[in-house]
Image (cartoon, rainbow, N blue to C red; front, top):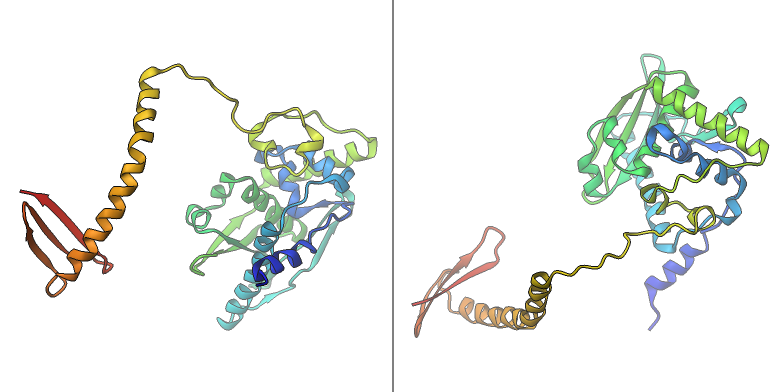
Length: 303
């Protein structure tokens, strides 16, 4: 029978392409801003060696597409709540610094249009982000900080809005951002430096930071000699090895014990009166009842 999921993945793979990059894109410039722990060299390679960029896979393309789909849903939900978001995908350009971008939308209040960026997140990231500073926890969320900062500068306003969405339960969260002038200056200096390197046909030095480099799409052409991942260590601890031996000895028994427990539990549950059990079987006493979620919890005591 045809694998339907594989067919979808194959179709998604067709969308994965490299595109020329002739400007400093607001959505990616944050990866090059040193104040955010970024790498200026990556920003230069994005402009000069984009054709050699490591491509993502079809499963990552699904994540990207889901983000676009969620943006549409959030805009719909806002509209249904009477919130008008204008200027969706308005293109921006800062010619002198060769910065370009397009914004998710603008929210107008008291005659001022504020940039709005909509980001869908997995539950763990969503729950961890409560303030603008919390975006510093991950490289890709740090890039969001630069992105909205640039949009505020391009619009000439001192506030911006993030609307975050939990991919798991649909919960929304708003984070209102005040313009960080220090970060704004760092973003502009990064763009200016990239432009100078591009014009000169040179690149900055390799930073050789595994935490920064490991997820960079240019790592294979930038620093192929770096060993990604932790180096191999050799331990000579006989007590530790003895415990490992014991673990692998009891591991099969543990699985057998678990399987047998499930058989006993099902047999005991069948004898429970009104959902509760109080049973004497030879030298064993078995008690049990459903927990808050309805699962039958069995206790076995040897008399």
